[in-house]
Image (cartoon, rainbow, N blue to C red; front, side, top):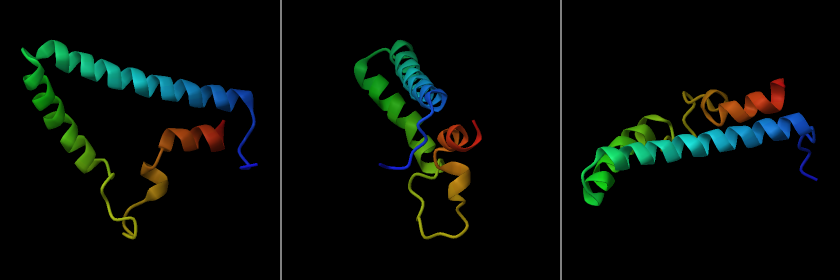
Length: 85
């Protein structure tokens, strides 16, 4: 109905990508929790580490900006999976 590719390999690659991203986020949180002495310090360190990632990743950029290349930054690994495999 949505005109998506219904190939099993592409679906499995997409699932693998989602699992790898979740594992990276979980390991980042585990590292911050193990490296900090208290819960308040862990929350402070994690927000201090993730704020620059959000600021410089293009999440808060204006979508009408013509300099921003959407094809390069938005879900690049999913587009590679969809178009090239």
